[in-house]
Image (cartoon, rainbow, N blue to C red; front, side, top):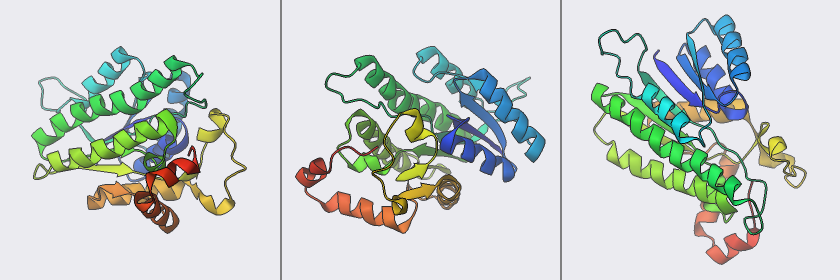
Length: 257
């Protein structure tokens, strides 16, 4: 069924993407910062799903690490002696909330967030579509957020870039056999909010989505060539409302994490 590369693959949505793709018989290239955790997840997936799993330890805020992942994505598969299969699906999932206000916060944290959620997404997408268009098939799935439509600081700004970038990429890819999809979920039950020490009690139960359903929805939209994938009717409605509200009203809502 081909090979998929997933960034941020050892936790949250990334881990769920890895499992669902493996269950669908995709071989995997898993990218994350911690080798021990990568090896653990890879071993579990190999044993349970019987697929091939490569691991790449990489911190996507570090340019040299991003370059190594881009090099893997650029593999076309027809080079003499090349044993690695080309990647047919790139899932740019890695990201984190800064968990601070911009004013008075640590600027290096803000810049690292931009490196991971913007710079790496651009560089890895460029490497992937380069070989995919040569082969005439493939897909890029970039994980953004409903936060892209809000005024939520660096995180929201990064996700707004990813949403707009993916739309533009989808236009650029017309007629190539390659597609681009941006996933824009709302609040999802994962480790994301706990790792950022963000308060979850302010979100009512109806506001939460489950990771398996979000990932299944996203992968189905990728297969259908959908450009903007927004799981659940309530978040589709919320996104529509955010697009038509005056920006002064959106700013009054405050941060969305």
